[in-house]
Length: 417
Image (cartoon, rainbow, N blue to C red; front, side, top):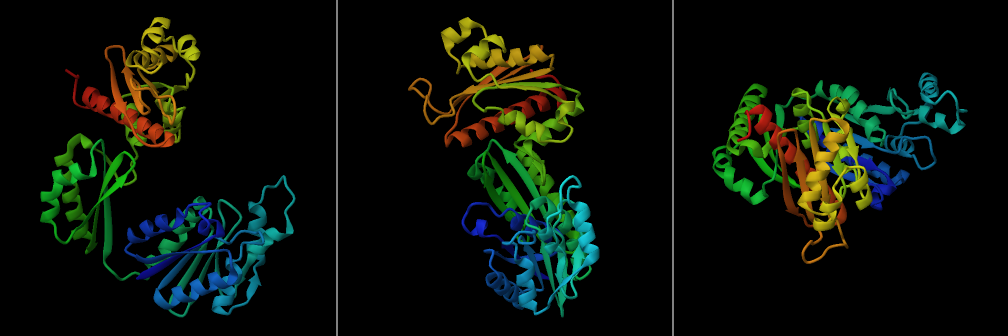
């Protein structure tokens, strides 16, 4: 089965918003044995959307549209769908009641909210569960059209619960399986050099190396009989992971912060962070994970020298002799964060994120990341390049990896020598 994806939104065309829905849908489709042959972005225009729908029906088996299903005047996907397939929009009273229930009860319901209860004749509604916008399923002869809300969380629920089950009943092709191996602290070229002999052994397996900020991912993709595909990809994954060792931090949907969080929870450890140049980014990454309060004890942002001294207990002599950006200050910050809140592990981060503030002795990008426990203290020096935002992210990434490697060596493999 071939599927086309159409993202609706003038803001996407103008670059004001990034289309994250299409890549998500494409990945979800291929994991369920469905190919997405083309992604298209169209503005909030009835004629443009209708043209994309007709073209999609001509060249694909199924069409998934996201966006333009809200209640406002520029939400015109319903009208475009009606025009394309030449079916009148019909008011659905049952759907209207569901939409009313979804609207906050302490606020008057605007009349235009019920625009969303109009569907092309013969369409099946996908009831809203997060917002008020329903989705639409419409079968045209042997083709299927799905229209989903543009809000990512709303779209994802409908895609998973309604669209994929609907499509899987019609899929007669063999499975497409994807496995992603995630690494950090290694370049794309070095990674390929380490595994090129493995890649060469599997000609039928599609292997790609994908570069991300401070990470390199290895994508394995194979189409065929489900059992044979699963066995082969599992074997290749294990072979590559064994070759790369600790450079591999996770697989598929893993993130570095999730992996580190699991290690902290497993060993019942509490973490405190004192981060200066990252401005709370590391703490934010940890606290984005549900349940992180089990192990993330505190995040402190001692941005000024005075706060480093008064709150985090960095000695005045250290600041005077070595400056706020130094290994000594980072180590004192890690110690202070741990001791102040009674955590098992403290991390201290200080650096120059730029674009100004650097000197020949201490250039922009210079960063120190320190770790502190009752028995272990160490600090690492880095020089990162890029914009201010990129330097901040790279610093948070290296801090997470430093902590991951420490936890693996100390608690997974025994005492560090």
